[in-house]
Amino acid sequence: MKFCRFLIGAIVVAASCFAAPVFAAEVKIGFIDLDRLTRESAQADRATKKLEKDFAPREQELRRLEQQVKNLQGQLEKDALTMSESDRRGKEQELGRQTRDFQRLQREYREDLNLRRNEEMAALFERANRVIRQIAEAEKFDLVLQEAVYRSPRIDITDKVLKSLAAEK
Image 1 (cartoon, rainbow, N blue to C red):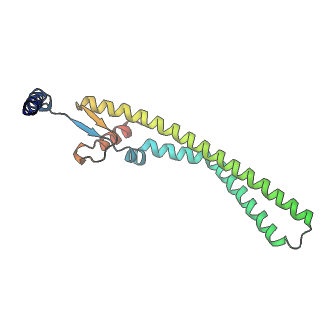
Image 2 (cartoon, rainbow, N blue to C red):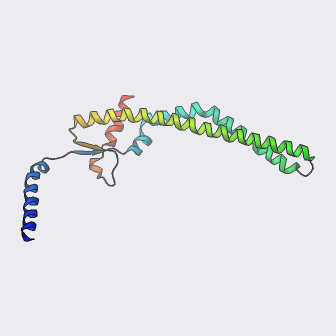
């Protein structure tokens, strides 16, 4: 039993002696804050404005349809007691149809917007990754991380990436 402990101890000491030269070399690490990159980069801002412009007509149409549904619902609630049974059923069916159409168009709008936003962000991340590689190679980084539980501000290279992206236009 003592021999096993001695042997394990000797192996640990030997392994640490061989690993020491590896750890003696300085490792240069950088960090990129992706949230900040998507909030502050000029490309992300341009992409957001482009999406808003491209999707504005559909958004206005959705607002118009939503107002139509609300008006029809309000009219139905107000006049339900004075309407004939067939008129009331017809209005309820029309309200149901318009509500379904509105919900379908709203769902399609969200899906299309999310798809386009993802495409724009993928293009931004592709450009950012190219810039990050350039910075990492120029400044001899061994490792650049995009996610971490904790990071020191001194290893954050997000500002450099933002400046390089802005200069790239």
